[in-house]
Image 1 (cartoon, helix red, strand yellow):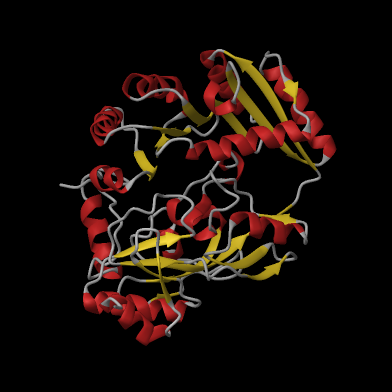
Image 2: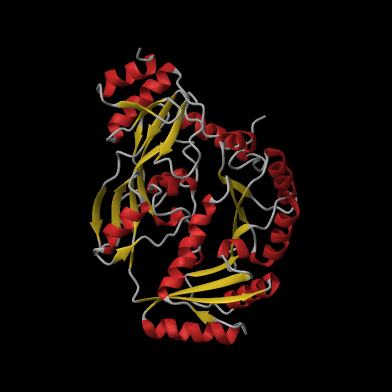
Length: 403
């Protein structure tokens, strides 16, 4: 017997529109923003709770929702304009597919999010999960020129534009970057591109953690022109020691000059990795975020990197850690209960260190919240935004901890 939700969605989108997820819940993969808007309008009217799935490659698919929305059918690279360094893609297109298509025109997305090859670009933007390339190119939101998303009550919103230079004023498109889908479901993105560099070189140094964080600060102070300056724990770098990796991109003369400056600035035993070794290092670090069920993102000042890593070691562990030696951002992956995570977040809050839950099972997301406690006044603002874009609280996205 067909359940009522499946029957209603089939009435709206057709008999073949609804399937089931691995937990037996109704699952729909709309093929357009308009189809998604019809489904979300129904969910709002009927009071259904909705889980956003993307391509189900990042977070666990264990949210107890009435209806699952997948963006897997929204998988087109709509347009590439290499002369303008912009592209338009649908949210369900995988990161690897997009980069492969862009390479045909000698351009790329300057972004390396964890788990990147099979993740949907919508997931990358919604969770704000940038990798080591954030050192030069900034967070994921800096790639975004415009976006289309569907609100919790079925409205299609199209803020931003398709060109690098756009109108001044509040950029609503940035609201969805890092919001974990709390304000709506992304369907299409307009993104900034860069030309593929002539040379891509990685230098690597091994040693004690403190010596490498000091070297990272020295390299930052010297303004070494690196696209990534990343510190890896032994488990993350698949090495017996801590590793500091410096990634240089550009024309050959510039890269060689910066490599020489790196060696002169930080007196460490530097090794230039062969291309296949460099690919293995960055690829392995990217996929290590899936080696544990919980992934946290911390934002610290560079001078506080050592103290924050000590805090992690005291309250969680120092297993899988990747840290921006020049940006201060830290990503930790491992296993932890909500209670341990709460204790760590309280300790971090005492030092004004924000802790974001990037991924985890539903019990952790619900009990811990993606952002946890907000600063005074912020919680009310976020609440008003959610009421505006999802007045029925249809979307199951726990930004703060459960009361």
